[in-house]
Length: 376
Image (tube, rainbow, N blue to C red; front, side, top):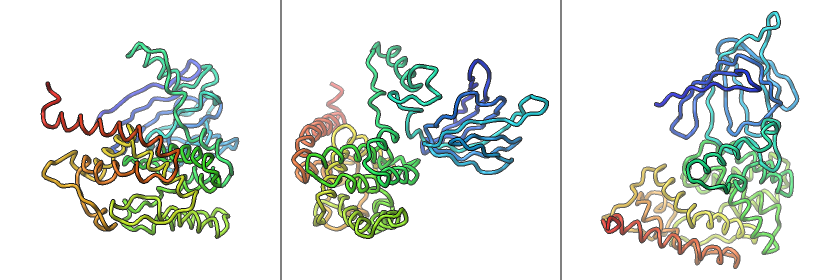
């Protein structure tokens, strides 16, 4: 375990002292000694967290409302909540407060470069943009910035067509926080945006597509062992959010058929909207992202990278697909290389071609190196 110590300053004076360490899920535990008020305007954090005042207490401004926190009370914040800390005072002097918190992996940047939050306004640009620009210039001698194209929850929410779709995204963000299997919020956001583009090209109902995309990986059968948990979770959440039965049932039926369940299992019928989301989901399983997700999932479930003695399997049942351990490289032959020919829309097929070829080159290089040929 590697401990990190950091002094956080705001407007020229020490705000807090931080001792932190990483957790296995990519998040962290942070111990803060807060010694001054947060002089910045209320701002968002890039992670979800739960924190406890251990010694002392403080007040917090949350979305314009001031809340008092007593010692040992749990404080839970989501990425989209704006807040700032205000210490109690005696004779005009701030009373320090010691807190301990559990933080999720980083889910989004501090703010969007195109729409600066109050935290970053004094910088003239997003704090993350500044960091990555300097890092690229220092380590690679490059001036271009990729950060401004990073897909954030805020940006995707703003592009959603309805409040229900935005609520579904926020629900997914809460449910998938901390995932390290490649089925995390960033996956959902990529699928959401791709599905939007496919829906416009195909003339599909955009709101329904967005809702399916936001909820498609919740309580997924790969993790629960039950193909009904995901559709049921989406159906129940939609009804609880005020949706009509027709929409809830339609979304649930499509989610039941989106996931790949084995090369030899019969496909389930989908609506036009479900087909758009399935294509977007499968596109995210191809190319560079698909390769990264394949090995992330393999590590998550304990699969070896490759074993020539383990044969590929043409799974004909969901049970076989779930119970066969296999290897991460076998997954390319058992699923990923099959997806290009199973796309529903012409737009997705054209995108899939290039990503499929990229994966073929990767696997060929992998096998060359595995067999020692890559050392020549």
